[in-house]
Length: 154
Image (cartoon, rainbow, N blue to C red; front, top):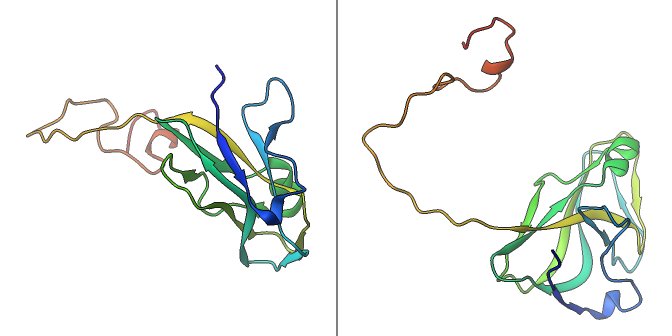
């Protein structure tokens, strides 16, 4: 299935390519850093990295902004609100919150693939208040209760 994302490229991204899939089987498209000068993120620090893009997503969709696995493994670069959500009605610049969880300063350079984005359908929900809910084997067990290795829920 192919959907159309309308995009306005801001002046600070005029020379950068639009987001693209790296391979035919890729689920996510790469987002590029539209920084005008190199940006150094110190260990433990966060920065807002511009993409220079304003998008109009198809109705009923969101853009999920996710970290790149190579940056996470090699440099400790993570997105602290991952996945970030770009709503279909947002019309500001898409920017990426980047955190350096590594041990060395990390330099973001112009045109660097800084994150990836997945276009995903959104199911909207309504809440229906009830007096009780169906019983399940798991019940209220959470936070590791299914992985205790005891063969029963804690």
